[in-house]
Length: 359
Image (cartoon, rainbow, N blue to C red; front, side, top):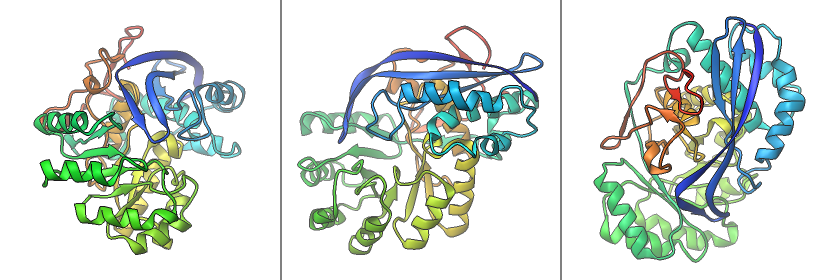
């Protein structure tokens, strides 16, 4: 397929509720959509997951626009591509900027699947007809509101609850959840809010039988995480530290974690995400698919990725209604009793509300 045209659209969506983590609060999601068009006027859709501010990573909406316009789009425009894996090869001379790279690469994967009249799930090699999903809950103003949210999501059937924690809102918060919900699968996400000086505090979390603690230490660290994992029983899951298969290999060999959170944007696209999945399957490391407050375009890609066999833990791909009054796709992503049914139409198998074209 020859890449004849690439279009960027800047979007802004208001979340139903503010989402608070250890690094800030988000309610407005400013993001990019990309469409890649071939010589037969077929289109594939991709989404940038970068935030407005560089709090999760160094990338932002503005840096993504710069990288796409000045480097990444010129690298693929006019090129003939046999398989989406070739996109990462074209981007190899450009360092990092993984979220920008994933925006185009995801659109090429969608286009590739449509040209073959197969679903993105089939194109990636996925086999599942439905996936288990969990829910991620931001930091609340008080424990009572948090407990009410947890109860609501349990009643909706979500298979796992993830809560955000930070110093001062950690052990006692988790204790309160465990007292009311002693058996719910529960994990804590620290978003790099702690250091090795907090080992004794983090050891206290062992008593609560958590599935994992996600990224407790620095975002660029795998050494201290290995030290911490030796001292606590709770499995460590790495998120922000993992940007590539090579990062994954080093973390696993060092014993820095027992679980990996795979986010398509963070690792540079579906091709690299699949490589990480395959390596972790070989090494006996569980993986799950994290969320970046995506619209339905990015959410559809996450669903397809999660159909691969080693996604053994419920991901953060909740239904559209969890975040948005109205998503930009139709049909919207629907979670029923903790499951999402995997679509099997061609490509990412949804329509865009934005301009009515099949996506």
